[in-house]
Length: 73
Image 1 (cartoon, rainbow, N blue to C red):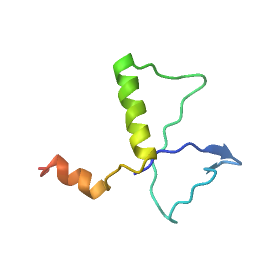
Image 2: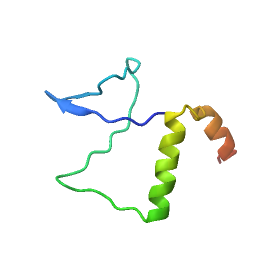
Image 3: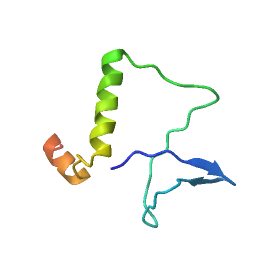
């Protein structure tokens, strides 16, 4: 999984410098207007640390992640 930022151009989402497989399903979070969100200092630090780990390639596959969650039922 990766997190990136794109821009809507002519009704399509463009992500500069990124390529995705044809037919890939993606999740899009789009703020409305000037809507944003705020994090507590600890949560922001955790988020920034997680982004830095991802930037360094310290990630696991979705399959590994789901296995770590354990059986679902």
